[in-house]
Image (tube, rainbow, N blue to C red; front, side, top):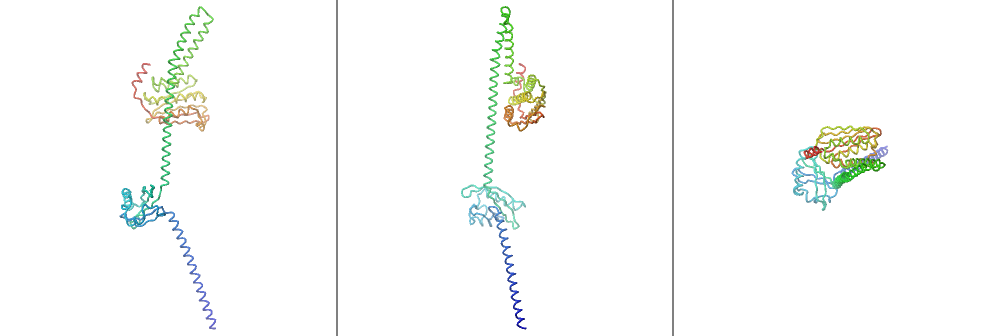
Length: 395
């Protein structure tokens, strides 16, 4: 009996020992799992950490640091730990950092500064965020933003290059427009001063020939009279062409009268009704602005006559907040906005003229809904009012 009891005691003791060993093993496995989880968490935190981290005392002394790569440090740890910011950093940057440390101790929000430092002979760009802990130590998280800063600088340079290219193109377009207008003026002057005079002399000769033939060769009188009529018609066409090439009425009468004239001329030539209104336009708009608006009106009305199919058009010129506004509208067939890019040289010329003056051109159209052209350019007043009025009176 005693032997059985002893055996049971021994068995119970062994069972307890096995259970204790199993419990200890389970606890060890849980501890190891917790340790691995902690290590993984710490590793994740370290991976999420910025490139550099410094702990600075309230007097600016470096207390601790973290660096993914010690090569990223401005100086080795033994040269900055236990020393102040002013002892380590360049004078100007040290002042910036100490000011940030002072502000961080008073603020609940992070204090952000940006700075540059030469690391291994290469200028690096950094962003630092400073926060104060409960022990009045300042923790400084530093990120190397050199790559992003280089990209930003590259984008800025490209943007600057594009802007300079745009300005050069706009200046070139302006010179081309000015050259075109100068050539138009020269051709108009040649037509008016040379061909018109020659045709006038030819017409006089034909009239004299008609009077002489009246008694000597009656059969040739009709031919001479027809030739004289055709010469007069050609002279009239050349006169009209001369005015289209160079609108002298702008210099003689001013912008409003010139706009009224082109509206009347195009309307009479193409049998369309053009309603012109204006409000608040000064009598002395600068020549460049006047020519721009005149040419756009001329081109737009010719487009109405040729392409819209509308028998009516409206033109309005007004002034608002230091800008001239030109609006031209018709109720014709219109066209698709997608076809603007493939538009003719007329629309391109309008756009270049407006861009050269620093203005804006808007074209709205749709199939069957007509076309609206809006122009806004800065109002530049000419100082030569007296000369303009005197020229108009003499005309």
